[in-house]
Length: 93
Image (cartoon, rainbow, N blue to C red; front, side, top):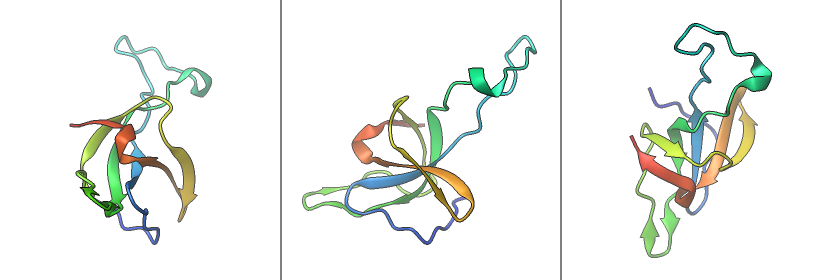
């Protein structure tokens, strides 16, 4: 399931593909794009090598939870991704 990009993150940076936002609520109500919350879950696509004495602990293919405002949105090869520091990741699911 892991994708391959021509972008390599440096140091402790990680590239994450955000999960799709929910279209409907549990009751079946459709949520418009303007009211959708940003997803806080995604799949790691690539990870840098880490800092000098701190290797990165996540790897490509890991599903992770991250902070609501974590990362910087980037467009690479037609896809939307987030690039963030490993410290912005809260948990591996």
